[in-house]
Image (cartoon, rainbow over all chains, first blue to last red; front, top):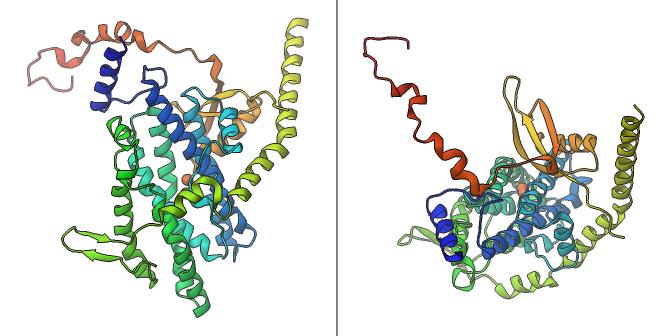
Length: 316
Length: 95
Ligand SMILES: [Fe+2]
Ligand SMILES: [Fe+2]
């Protein structure tokens, strides 16, 4: 019976028929999705912290409203994704519990500090840029609620990248000190950004199954290559240098070659030993704990109002 | 210290006057007023709507995926419900 169901399931996937929450699905498909979507949601939420750091110090009102709107969008992305994950049978509180206990992961790039205003430019340009590369194919992922959430997310992301690039552009047209600040931000964010696509394909054990189930459409290395290929020209336009001496056009491949990623560092950060892991997690846990009284009060108020309404019905 | 999770609500948005409300997603809120306020912040940051409906998710009743064939397949062979089923002369206009 199970075999038969699994065949029907794979057949639907092959025919590009979306899987919806109440449809039969292999347990491993459900678990893989749940892990991926909840991690994705956590990344959106934790991702607000490095940029939130600069909202009060934005150089002018135009930059401030843009950054505020971007950070608010990221909160929205987290909420769309948590809802999508909940349709797979895990409660919101359980997901948050996994984040707060350190059991669940989020994108390791958010464990790096935002030292200067130029980091707001580099993050929008590179981090959101890499996220877009990852997310556009996810709009066609096989699980309906995830695909629909990603369509909303992708619509909103393009402004994020453009506002970041505009910050970089303004800095590179400014004083020597501003130019240097932009270059320094690129130097610090480049390698973490191209690491965002995850381990190399031969070191990414679950990839093949995810591709077969059409959760993923492209491999980590394919997406990383695409990102490098489009970003080089963008850096040139800014007059900035990508910090990779091995970066050069390969005529034969029709792609840029680039240097080896320091995977040691990547796995160290994933394991919790990045520069800001503790700080990020603490900020989330504090927000959750300090907000407890608000959640309790709102529940108490809602219960009181409902009881009152019920009494009135009985009295009538 | 763990408190009860706020209930889940389904959100429906009318994109503009003249269109149906369409399901856009869900969210948690303590009561219906908060559900509408949160829906506004989460789902209409870019003028996506002019009206919001929220329904507590537990009140949605859905057909069973396993009944899909029984429910919807009978319509398949009733092609006489479509205008193209009827053979009429080409000279006939506006029908
Ligand atoms: Fe996002
Ligand atoms: Fe973004």
